[in-house]
Image: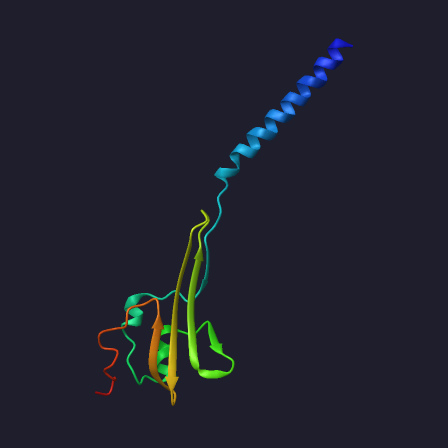
Length: 121
């Protein structure tokens, strides 16, 4: 009887040690980075000029992530990166058009030095 009891205890101890060792390895699991949206760099933003048409802006930056349903003159560019290690990175750019021409930009990027100079000047 003592032999059966010691075998069941040893099986339980082996199972418990395996479970603990597997849970300790959970920090070593590789988690991928998850990017979403439009990745923009300042060098792309530096190409923007006031009075550019929507087509010209789209050529430079690509399609916006979202357009305002109630106002076709506001475009939203958004980029989010959720890293596997838990860090988050976000950048946004909002472009406003007037009469189908770029009028204003706001967001997390610096306004280009030449932004207020139209392309045709």
